[in-house]
Length: 72
Image (cartoon, rainbow, N blue to C red; front, side, top):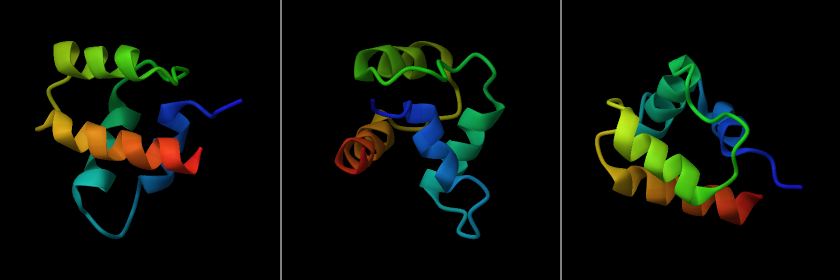
């Protein structure tokens, strides 16, 4: 079984590099409504598009999703 996207992203949290990826992971950690157990692209993408204010571009999510899929 594939680990949830949220769990995958937590490995980028508290990084010494303060890049878009680590800031995105930190924002997910603080978002208590994020679908933490989902591995579904559409569910997570819709959530981010409709309810989050911390992601500046959905292209960032798409890039991270490709990493997630290639490492899962």
